[in-house]
Picture 1 (cartoon, protein in one colour):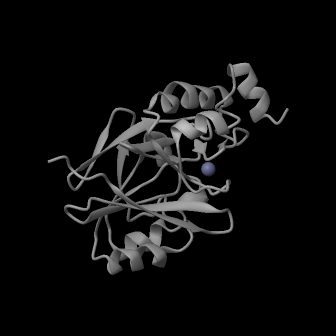
Picture 2 (cartoon, helix red, strand yellow):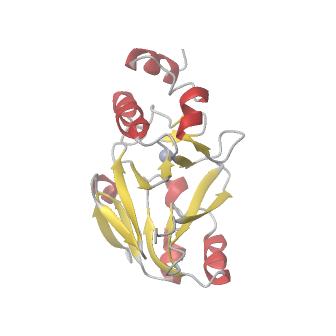
Amino acid sequence: MKPKQLKIIQFELGPMDNFAYIIQCEETNDCMIVDPAWDSEKYTRTIEKYNLNLSGILVTHGHHDHTNALEPILNYKNCPVYCSTGQIKFDYPSSSTIIQVNATDTIKLGNQTINVLSTPGHSSDHIAYYSRPHLISGDALFIDGCGQCDLPSSNINAMYNTLFNVLLRLPESTIIYPGHNYSTKKTDTLKNQKTTNRFLTSKNEKEFIRKRNGF
Ligand SMILES: [Zn+2]
């Protein structure tokens, strides 16, 4: 029998329209929180409501608006925090058990497998999490947008490569779960985004850079 897909619960919270997620293996009830920020009780209440076992925390990148609830979550349950090698330099709570992951690594969640994708551009160490058909894209790809590329560790050329050579190579049926709610839709398929996302319709890198820089 084909294993069920991951179940994804989306949370919208904080003053910056962040999305965070609880992802769950429905066969074992193990779950992980992706990018825990702003309101730790929102996550813990959901975990308790559905009687889930929190087995880890996934971080797409170390920016404050994606990580500022790490400490209370780890106080609630001290589980491993998965992040990319470069993210180590951010200030994680001292109680963290950090597991460094990079492209081609996989993470087990119950009976499900999550693939780590290297997606730099918005920040140099950004990673995304993919478990077919779901892509948790953090601040790499938004619905009808993409992450800022003018921050201290941004690289606009790396963002082009991430979008066009990593994320656009995923199946068109991929469902995108972004790191912020900057659109009228909260999720969308890659197939739709190929036509409605103005960054993804760029004909080449030069055009993408011009659009991303606001010209
Ligand atoms: Zn960010």
